[in-house]
Image (cartoon, rainbow, N blue to C red; front, side, top):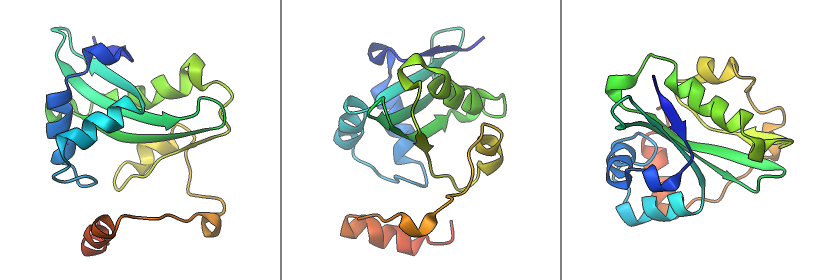
Length: 146
């Protein structure tokens, strides 16, 4: 049984930092930056029967028109059990997200998971732009194929 909670007091920030620092999208991220990201986001944790955190995800949102789901992570020991999909569903079904017109995310390898929840490639990709910090842009260019 997995317990899903958006109670920020339950989040194991040291654990989350370790996960994110080892991820392909934020390798080596500083703990202070993770703490700032958590503070400015609607976060969800998933906890096993013993209360240990096994999952994390966050949404950056105005709770009215737009949400960006980010940092979806499942501990390696808890993967392939549908927990990732359930975490995203927690956001999509949350009363605080009711009526949001656009929910976005980026993934390298979980397209099927998110497609089953209604996500699809951008309808108008030519309208989207981004501004990246120079060092982050350089890191992305180095790993452009992943």
